[in-house]
Image (cartoon, helix red, strand yellow):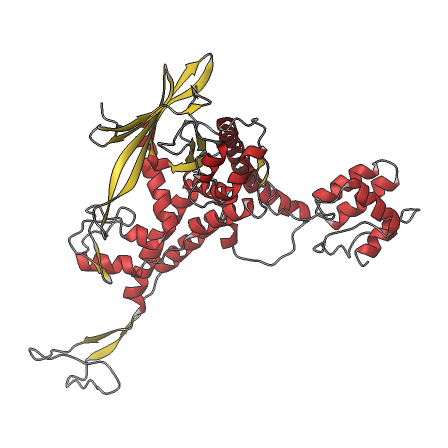
Length: 502
């Protein structure tokens, strides 16, 4: 049994992860994905290759023809743009957190590699969206001296820290039932480390980090590809070994060791289909779009050629000879063009909304909400599961330093939904004026609708309302079309209208 053995779920999904990675990476990653792993040489590729996994060669194509076929193909990277957009939506607002005093100083360098907590969270979420799997580990500096003061430990940066592992790095795992609960009892992580050969040369070496639970407690071993043991340690907290593995595997929408489908996989596959259609379309344009002269009824002397251009004239002795230009006719390219548009629309439906044509037509407020609710629900699930996993990891850090496990950590789940519609403003005010809604509920609704600053307390709102009307943030929407159907008897609506410039 080798430490490099992989889990069956890993084997079943690693090519899906690679497909997602390559498409997100873009055109160069796709066209370098040869079966024979040939090297890129200048503007063309080594002609000793067989075929590209993502863009198979056409029947009968020579090596040179296949190279130019690939070079002409355009790649419209909807997948990468969608990943950037979705990650940006979650981190449009900074994470909110409350940490025990003992680990608060770690926030600015949560990884001991210079990444703060927000940056680490963004890296985790990006992996979660891209391939639907990432691991978070709480680690402790190896070979840390014992029996030193807290001040000395802080000076030497001896404290727990976080690191994340990609899906491809988590090659094996085992979940067991202990006291009726599912517990992670084995994780094997594939790592690449730099080994300095001399002053100017550094080689990359593969090693395996094995985390498991033994009768003595949590154990960490580092092994070579040949199963040679490089190091072994049983981390302790207050002199006692840990009874769990401080490693959480985060899927697309929950913390689970079971592999989940990458959120972008359908989009990635459609993106690849679009790429292949693009190759065929550009290939067709190349051969049908270029002017192609022809002559008929002419017998040229051996070795003679015809030149095309304003400095040349064709004079044929046979009056029945004919010359002209070939012109492409038919619907072949039109069909390919329609296929490209169809896939672009499909990608928009699958998540890349920014790729859809901007029709610039007014849509009802409720229609916009319904169109985006599905995407927001998927993102919200990703955001909440990442929040839970990071909270768990931060609590482990707190436990490691003897602090209470009272961490609160939350990522944004408000993804830019439309602000409150003018009709809703009027309806809420009417309900308040009709004694069907208390002022506190009106205030909460205005905060959710982004008409009132989220930092404002109800007491402040109430005081400002009594004084000079409610305080709205600077980016309040234009509600100039607020209906006059509801006319309150007191000055509340007048104050609000005044603040909104109505």
